[in-house]
Amino acid sequence: MQWILLITSLPTENATARMRIWRALKTLGCASLRDGVWLLPAQGNTHNSLGTVAEDTRKSGGDAWVLDIQANQQQAETFPALFDRGADYSAWLEELAQCDPLAEDIPATRKLLKNAAKRLATIMDTDYFPHPLQATAQKRLATTEAALQKRQVSTEPSFREGMPERLDKADFQGRTWATRQDLWVDRLASAWLIHCFIDPQAQFLWLENTAGCPANALGFDFDGARFTHIGKRVTFETLLASFGLEQDVGLQRLSKLVHTLDVGGTNPEAAGFALLLKGLKHRINDDDALLLAGTQILHDFYHAFSLQEDSP
Image (cartoon, rainbow, N blue to C red):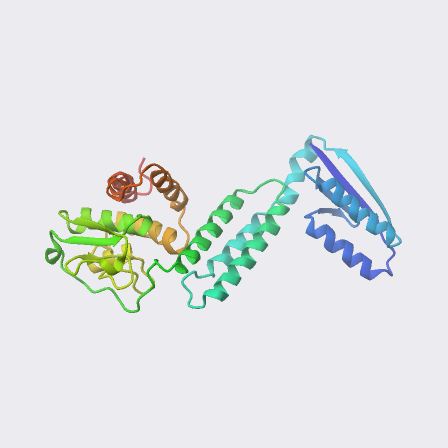
């Protein structure tokens, strides 16, 4: 692999130039081999970038040389480690975890996410040997941004204060349940939960306009519905709490996945689940058919989540 060395020498009295050039080299993500000796892999525009720094060095009264080198075996094994961005990604992920997409001040949260996206882009610009955490960071940012975006869409339910009411499943059998049409994560998973764990004879209505919800129907996942977002629970979690299902390990783990995709959070399986649902939505336009197809996926996730962690 080809590498580029920049060797610089500046007059000690020109502190302003020294600081400017140091900052430029740090922005490029250069590795410092010793004082005045900087290394970059020969990728993309790195040669031109170091040439620009070298020119600035000369204009500031110093000397600079840009050298192309071929690493030997030992160097080829050790140089990439000088560009390990794992610590940067870990710190960034910790910061993002503090950004709550459910926070009341939406403009402030939007600003935090915008700044987080810029910081992530900066790290990725110098991640010359892509670290595994790069993909994790991108997924976490996308999930959090999507959760915030959904809060700003008028059709999405707001979060009602309080705690879910504890209910008896026996009082909710053979009922008609209604939610917004064009199912997505929380509505799809909630309909599955209702049919499989609460009301096996449930009938579903997919509403174009929630204002037209029949009086005898049990609404879910829209403002004014009997079952919706309460506290920091999404509708799926509200249903779990309402009908005493929170102790089911499989449902517990599934609820974390639904919560992440609906309002943000961290869950390793969320991206895969979202990809499967995206595929279903692409080929199925009918909500009844979508629920039928989604039921099998949710069954599989539930049974996998119910197994012991070390089960095959």
